[in-house]
Image (cartoon, rainbow, N blue to C red):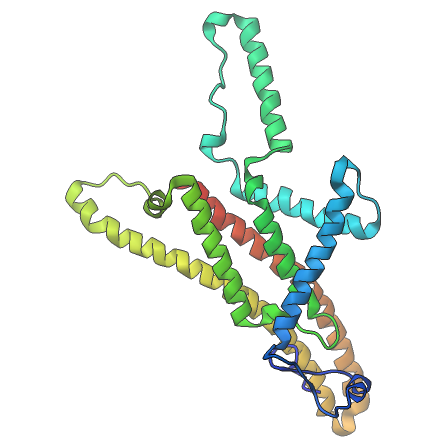
Length: 303
């Protein structure tokens, strides 16, 4: 078996010998219709995410509490993304705050106090029940759980992580970029969003004409670079973990007469790296969702 089969994509899928015998083959299983291994695994990740959250949505319908360790685990992750990533990162845009923060002086102290209490209750309700950042939550949820399932598939034997392929992470970063521009355009208009890339500066007319276009080009380039780094970061971290596993597995083939020492050490090393990979799978999904939320925040909260 190729020790690096987790890292590389291809049209062949390594399967156990008894499965190959069932298909009457003595080599790797070749996928039909020009499909590749990571194409299939991406569909598997999407289907798993759909099944899990369709079941979860059915259980929370009507305001009923979710029961069961399995469903509580996924609900916990969903709430964590909402409460610890999306809402704090995106925040409340300035124009989403109420403007009636003060009672009218001519209405008396008691009336002003009751108005303030009412506004405080409404503000608390808005934060707890209908936070303005929640409109972006479905996209961030989708990104987080899709990346998570893609990462976790690599922990299963004979599978692999699609996110260990730069083409997959590049498309994910492209989708984030498209949504960032779309959300910024919805907030300020397309022209307003492009204009917001340049921070406000009090410059004399001639200097502004000279500097502002240059600053805009730099800021636009930085926006593209940030999304490019988003793709490279995920790809590099996931690929590195699988590569290390492949190296430890390769030690067995090179053991020779030292196999009584090398094989147990290699297996223990793979177990340790495998546990670390599980942590990295969740961590990288968290980082991807966090950076996505920060990019959205910069788009909907211009300078």
